[in-house]
Amino acid sequence: MVNFLFGSPRWQAISSLRLEHRIAYALERQMERPAWAPRSIDISVPSVARIYDYYLGGSHNFEVDREAARRAMEFMPGLPKVMQANRAFMRRAVDFALEEGITQFLDIGSGIPTFGSVHEVAQAARPGARVVYVDHDPVAVAHSQAVLEGNEDADVVAADLRKPREILESPLVRRLIDLNRPVALLLVAILHFVEDADDPYQAVAELRDALAPGSLLILTHASHEGIPLPEERSESVVDVYKDIRNPLIMRSRDEIARFFEGYDMVEPGLVPLASWRSRTAPEDEDPYAFSGFAGVGRTA
Image: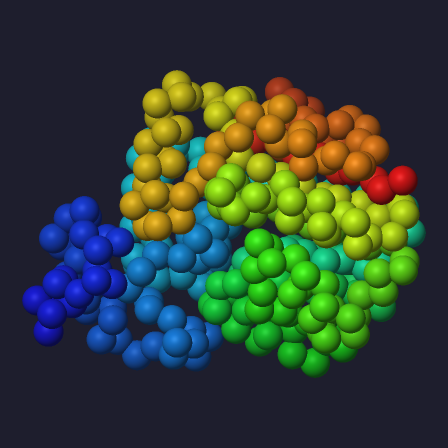
């Protein structure tokens, strides 16, 4: 059984890991599958959504995901802090959108909803706020469905950012989101997983053109700039994601700024994660909290 698993194409994504970890994965494959993990997914292959869940301290991940995360943390030990700073920005940005009177949220690349997700923040402050999550990862979609069961004002769509028309024309999106009114579009920690060959700028522009005036783009993106480590260390993290067949694209600040074409930037502009309207003094933040960039733009 173990020899069969190691020789299968599915095993190639983790073939570079140590033998004892491969054995652990093989044994885990024989364990009872938890109710939240769809039968259609291969739980022996790492998932970006589950790795992110692990960084945030969630429980919807497997040893294969935790091992990939630990490998990345060997080169950048502050990765969980980066993810926490990313999540904290998202909550501040949702609060800002509510202050602006926006009560519709379209979160693309939403991942696995852990504590403090968009619908929790928005609906706690404004009952009746509407939220649609979008992700192409079946685990993220399945878990979102379980979390949102009975919530009439939130739903999840299985779709891909690279196909914005499918998202915009989804019956679930049309049921909850009125594109004739301002919408907060969240692209949080997703664009750095879209390669240039897939033209992410065009996808973002197509989404922008569908939004009503006064809508917001809430965006974060990984970058070599601002990381408190030599660039070769962050490149090693990129290699870990490449090994699990999820290329991590580290764009420059100028390249990230291009996603905001057609938007007016909200103060303080495109800044390091922890610098966007944080209530914590900079000297009290972990240096890793300033890795990557965050910004909010408004359609005219």
